[in-house]
Image 1 (tube, helix red, strand yellow):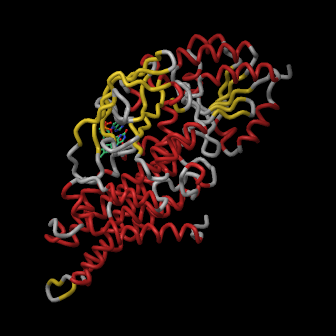
Image 2: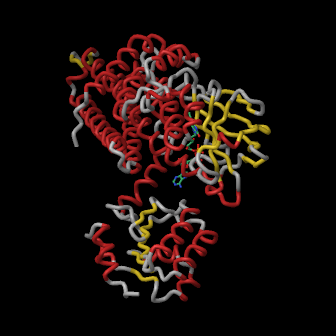
Length: 501
Ligand SMILES: Cc1cc2nc3c(=O)[nH]c(=O)nc-3n(C[C@H](O)[C@H](O)[C@H](O)COP(=O)(O)OP(=O)(O)OC[C@H]3O[C@@H](n4cnc5c(N)ncnc54)[C@H](O)[C@@H]3O)c2cc1C
């Protein structure tokens, strides 16, 4: 993979670095102390195009790529992680979702003012009882004519106290859990919206975070992003992209702590030598540099994949997991290198240490990143194609059409499915009672065959009763038979083994 930066990418990196050094560095320690939201510098960043980097110019953004975005986030976060948080929420969590799922009208109204930095955006998924378990949300949206009435309480909304618009997730059908959620574009200046008290935080203290209460807030149906039921899918897709930004923020914090440590080790003396001449200190410096370099490569790898339009969830999770744990490790060692001075508020290393911790928590904790990564690297999903279950359609297009229509209603499925030559990405067959049975009925009645490499997948897809009825139709394909094949070859082979109708 070629990581040589283009002229444009170098230009945005340098612009972000110059701005951070000139405008943010002088206030970073002070706003950390007071917790004051840095409205002036955030507005300036908007004018420089840093608040909607990946959004096209038509919608107020800079029209650049994800690599440019991570370069800029790193530079800003190296100087002040609070600015990095505000920038990252605005760029990824707010803008990216509207860019990907919004209508043209929604983009003009809700994206343009935020991507251009004239207004501030936020993202609100978490609730008091649901963070990692985001599907368990209670904030309720009930249809009322051409609008939805929203009630309930959200927590931990970054930029919540200052945001003009918020990407909000609410349940429209609690029985369906995450499949019954919707996403709304909320105008915070409308009645029924109330921002609660600001959270007193360990780090990123100048990024304002608060609870928000909705009391009969009326959201016009036209402000729904995607369709009713799409909310969770939108949230997960947005978080995939957001994680690359948080990884870049972690990288910036780690880089700052590393540079401070190298400089200090060249100045501080003990036992008649510079401390940097002791091997113990050199080893810490070497390990810091190595982990930072590895983080950077993981981040660029995820960003490049996103820019190429390839799948990047696993890479984004790996980058966030590694870069955030690196930031925590490097900042801890940085304090060690500085000794007592590192523990003092007179130097910025203790701020880097406090700021680093959040990168292991928000946009999915390190444990949640491991939950994302593990099934993919274990091969629970087909490593090459993410295909888990092969559904072979014997009858011609009418059957395929009916099966697809059936699936179209329920794309939020657990197993990745190949239907004929049609791939349902990251499909989930979780709502089994409601989804699996009717879908299965359709498949069986149309003479469609199911093949899987794992019996477990099959039993998740087909209930015991159905499996008995379907014996001879649903079959398990041995792992060895398809382990070394590409999806296309596997499909050809499966088709050739089907009885002719
Ligand atoms: C400063 C800050 C800013 C934030 N900004 C936003 C924002 O702008 N918008 C927003 O929607 N949210 C935001 N959040 C919320 C954040 O995303 C959640 O705090 C985070 O996802 C973790 O959820 P939780 O706090 O409920 O912890 P919990 O989910 O209760 O987790 C507690 C612990 O249990 C672990 N755990 C949970 N489930 C599992 C599992 N299945 N397997 C293994 N371990 C598990 C977790 O990893 C963690 O260690 C913010 C949080 C903070 C602190």
